[in-house]
Image (tube, rainbow, N blue to C red):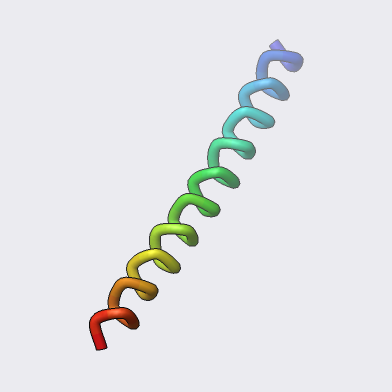
Length: 38
C-alpha cells in the first residue's frame, strides 16, 4: 500500500509540474501573440 501511495504521489507531482509548465508556455504564447498584434 505504502509503495503504491509513493508511486501515485510521484506521478501526481510530475503531472502537476508538466501542467504548470504547459500553462506557462500557453501564457507566454498568448502574450507573444498579443504583443505581435500591437
